[in-house]
Length: 505
Image 1 (tube, rainbow, N blue to C red):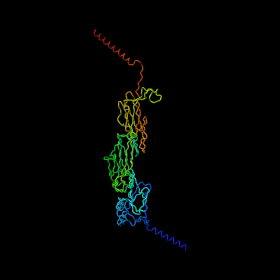
Image 2 (cartoon, helix red, strand yellow):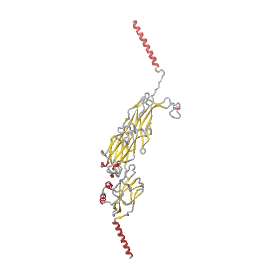
Image 3 (cartoon, rainbow, N blue to C red):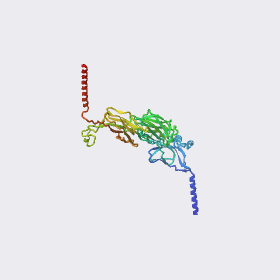
Image 4 (tube, one colour):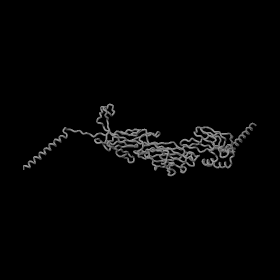
């Protein structure tokens, strides 16, 4: 008897389980909660479109029955929703989220008083129903508003995916003397007059498909030491060059930009997709206004972009953080000196270069002229940086706006009475910190020393006086004067005597 009873109970349990698995499961229609995820920095506005009885069918689909208009619906709250409205909503199930929202938004009044808000782990108690949840920000740099979330609501935690649009700026470095070209980085050094290559990048956010139109603008701001070349601009989408769909603007910019590259609507460029990189490459000339030394010459960029897929009229209100690169340039200073004849080394006990009478070991020397040459990696030869630098009163010689590399100093005019110096070869070497955009080391080598702050490599270049050769004997030129006088007198006497003899005949 007991055994039969156990079998009967087991059979009933199986029937109950089978019934449960094949039937729609109805939740209690008690109020439930909508919660924002912990740590969320945004506020989400909740709009009630419909109310109804929430349930899940045997395939896990959420079902809303006995549907009535909610507080933020377009019809009178509490009235029954017409079957034509429900049919229209069911028809969009296979569309994209953006297409669904075009239909759904026609049934909700977003200008009405919202049902409530949630943020940072807080909860809102609501009746089961159909709700639209709006991301109300705040939106940080590189971020965008989330597409409206519309759900048949049982207990729900709101944590919309927030994608970032990113941007970066780089500069390329080249060593003219070695021919080495370095990768895209945050610092470089160049000669004044050189064309400097720059690169801008923007990475399209993953929510790009949520937009019907998408504006994007590269903003670039250069200091006065750089001159932008608009004809040098090239644009790439994921490495493939494009020639249409954008414009380069240099005039009428009221935000201090040097130029902008504007995309009125990226959707018109079919190759653009979420996650792809748009690259802008261009060149600017390092000009005569360039800062020498550690001050450097900065170039800053950011992008603005569409950041609200729910409001196409909002325009490009998103912004990425500024990104800056720096270009350094240097100068060479040569001081022309010679030994001071009044200097007494025996009185310079402290080896200060000045004796006890105040005489310096070296003094400035006028009358020289120099030509500076730089090694060209292509030709393998030293080529003049500029024309000869000289002046009658000049004792200091300066060449500004130099890149790192190999140089040769040639004395092309030598002061009278002095020996011409041998050519001096030296190398300007520099080190930069890309993280802090600072010049950290500068050297010249072979008599030249570097100064990071001024960007100067300098040297004292000494000329030796010509030799005064020794002479022997004491008469010198006096002997020639005496002999010459005797010969003159003798010639006169001979001439007079000869005339008298001729007259007597």
